[in-house]
Length: 247
Image (tube, rainbow, N blue to C red; front, side, top):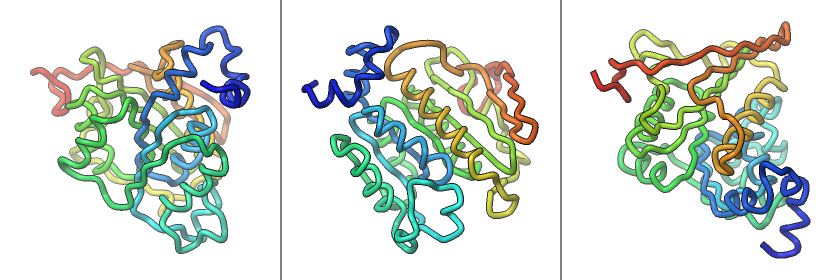
């Protein structure tokens, strides 16, 4: 690290659990962010600000007026632009040292697997079960940690799946059969809620990369923002899980 980096990240480096070694791990890391909407927006901004060396941004949508209520990485002048380009410009202003790779199409099959295998952590900010299951399966196959978040109405949740053979995967939490997608466009969402969940996702990703603290691996963190109540549920590995099971 040079002097400018030491100054930029000084408040993190001061943390005894983090120190220079933790910052260097962030600078050397690659994080794949699936979705640049309400969750991916704050997560990407915090990861860039914190000094993650390489962010791979995945989104095939364009910015719409209705996005701006909660997707804080985009601005009014970005309406009609691809979200990856809008996010790139915002992140460059925030931290020009971060390497940014843009993927403006849907990742599927072998390409999805290749990107996940190349990442140190995957952060899922998608809004549908089909994408979440596909991302989970690729993370399980590659043994790459997954930080999963979701928010709708006034409820949010975060979970971490290390995919190291010890603990559950996303499919242990949700079975594919009978699940319906819940989207903000159909149910609404409180603006700051996605910011809270996205910030927690970024925090968990940083902890995984720096190797500090205790992550949400094996736990589901639930937020009821209407009553401002938090709950934590223990998640168990399902031996019959179609994603990570051994039965």
